[in-house]
Image 1 (cartoon, rainbow, N blue to C red):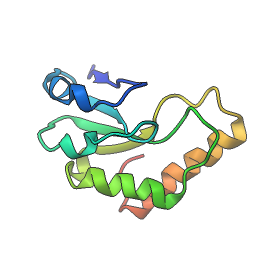
Image 2 (tube, helix red, strand yellow; image 1 turned 90 degrees about the horizontal axis):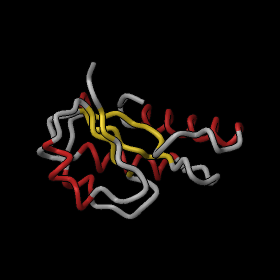
Image 3 (cartoon, rainbow, N blue to C red; image 1 turned 60 degrees about the horizontal axis):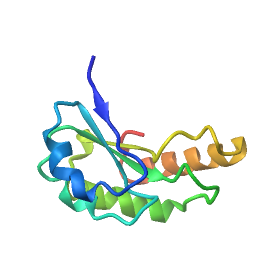
Length: 118
């Protein structure tokens, strides 16, 4: 079974080199909840990169434009066939209606950027 690593709660910038070398199939990067330059450092990654473009830790719903900008930034480093879109963490602590709106925003960004996997 393929393994994945998704570090949460801090920018991944400082550990990108280590993440790149992990023997895993997927690496997750939280691109939304903290300032990060990690998306610029993904060029050497051979794994599938899962970017969190929707912040699961607050109720503010991201705009399509905000999310598309993150996806386009990631696509400059990672080919679309190895890029997946996700929330930053699980949505279980958000009110149901907000979680649904956030998922709709994630899907809208995927569609707007050429069908990157969401």
